[in-house]
Image (cartoon, rainbow, N blue to C red; front, side, top):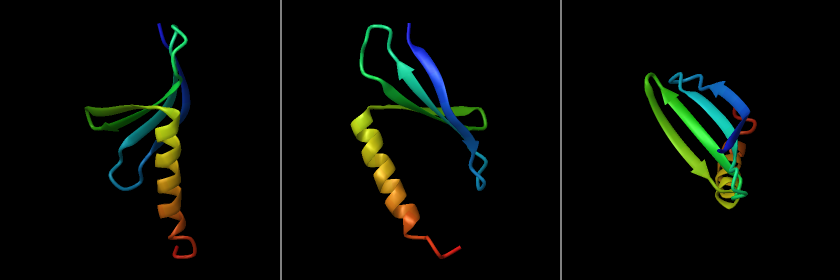
Length: 72
């Protein structure tokens, strides 16, 4: 059975979606994954992402968000 550890949980200010980030450790010794759970009302969207994809996604989001520094 896999072990799931919560990393972060927050709500999006506009739209109110609840986002959970979790680490998934597979009992069989498989690759650690990042689970992204997005809840919109009663609907869930779940992504299990490998470390390489998570780095690319994080880098792209950080670059985008950084383009707004000083524009608050």
